[in-house]
Image 1: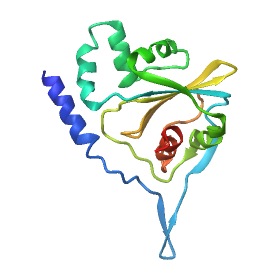
Image 2: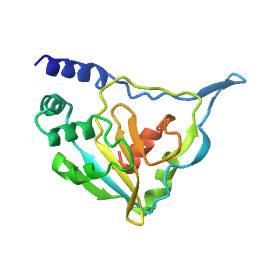
Image 3: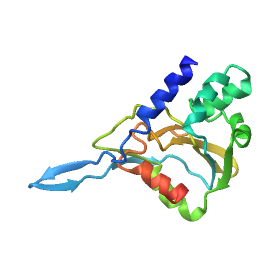
Image 4: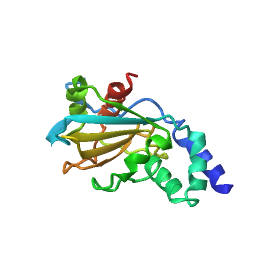
Length: 192
């Protein structure tokens, strides 16, 4: 019971109090503000021809239940690892995908006409400023990148905290999503 109260308190004060204002890269030059964009330092994360998109509408008030049930069964532990944790740990860890629908995720395919915009987000970049957030990551959005029907990359996204788990790429993903890329990706996927 203490764990549930603790988790609810953290959720209320961390994610809900987060301001919508994103960090901007601004540099002063001749007394004028100049927005400085990210520098592309590498290539695209993935060479793919198909993207499966899984989305969950899990609410923050259901998170305590995930913690409470994680030791009841392997399936409950897997559910928590997918939604809140680091599953998958590698590109070879794909068995979890078969359980996504039973965990409340809905599946759709990303249209090819969105691939160029997705590539703009999933490209290795260096940003003049990077930030990290301090809240409980809830991975409601999962992208499965495929090439000739073979899984080559997986990206789990938490838009509430601007966080991600990305496997299957050799690119540096530490600064993924900075400079407004999380917002761009949210608009591509959800149209919001």
